[in-house]
Image (tube, rainbow, N blue to C red):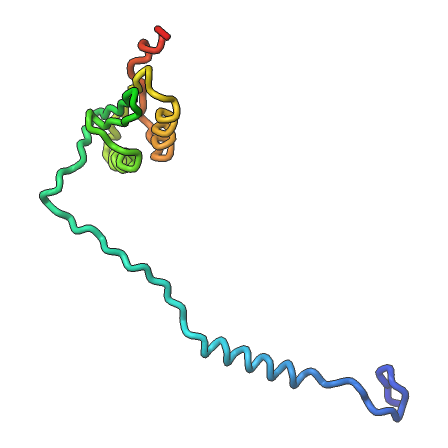
Length: 141
């Protein structure tokens, strides 16, 4: 005696056969994948040309001094710089062997927010040889 799968003997099977539908869907999926164009993401950059007349950054191989005046201007070896340029100089000093010392001398009247930004830049640049200069100026306040 044959085993029936839940239907009475002699009744027609009422379920749809989904195997051919799945096969057709898989073939269509593969066709779509093949016909999709390859996405290439390219960013066009105009890189700067190295000019021999461009002055090199003023980096001392022994020690560099960062000062902050009361107006909030940051100086690198007595040259005013912004925080992005300061980070570039710090990255250049990081690659030097041996790494030069960094002396930080904020003016006692300088805003703490500017000093904090400079300290954040030096931390992100992973400066290892750093010292504070002129701490005795803060004892009078």
